[in-house]
Amino acid sequence: MIIRHLDNVRTVDWGNGLSRRFLLESDGLGYTVTDTTVRAGTKSRLEYRNHLEACYCIEGSGEVVDMDGTSHPMVPGTLYALDQHDPHFLVASPDEDLRLICVFIPALRGDEVHNLDESGFSHY
Image (tube, rainbow, N blue to C red; front, top):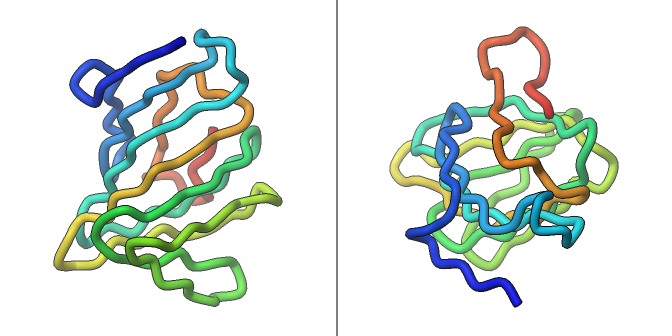
């Protein structure tokens, strides 16, 4: 059994927020669970080429925008899943942080960060 508390997990500044990584590849479960904060007023261009991801909003608000420009509002109780390695924009409200519980398959090593300055979509 693995027991972890928010105060004792690896925290990574991924560029536009914090990713608190509860389960990693080294735990041997095959998936990662994170508690992720997206800073208010940020827009992140993301794509996970090596992972599938599902995110469940627990606080704040924002939107996830797919490549055809369709915006999907993110409010507490909303889940989105990137089941096709979907490139997307993750946008936090200008007034409040967006907080998500995320699951990645396969598991993250734990040290991954985004490069939000590149001209394409940041990925890992």
